[in-house]
Amino acid sequence: MGKIELLQYVEDLVERKDFPEFKAGDTITVHYKIREGNKERIQNFQGVVLQRSGSGATETFTVRKITNGVGVERIFPFASPFIEQIDVNKRGAVRRARIFYLRDLTGKKARIKEKRR
Image 1: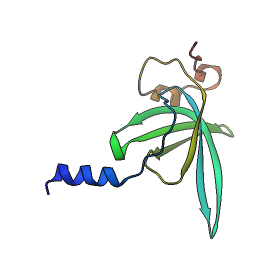
Image 2: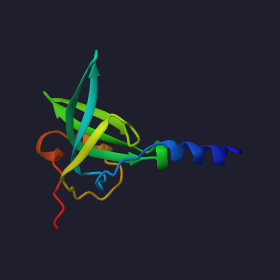
Image 3: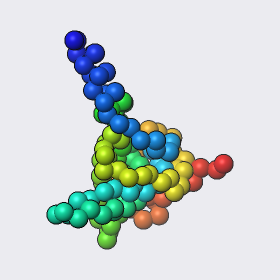
């Protein structure tokens, strides 16, 4: 079994849920399962998608939000069993796939225009 066949086999094993289509600039809410001791609860992480990276079983996306004046970024793997669901709150109108320039902007400058339907 070659490397490519092995990789294909592992990707087939990984279960992918059907999440809505989203891209950089969109505001999403990720419902994430958190285990504390023997208890399990769902925590919401709402923010702007900075990027989507990778493909197949290794695909990830980065979400950024501002909490108490501090920027918080979190990288979620698509194949994570802890992601319960993803809601798209707003569609953003941005021109690029990776919007890291958002990290340097604060206040009204950090707003993203909403895509018109």
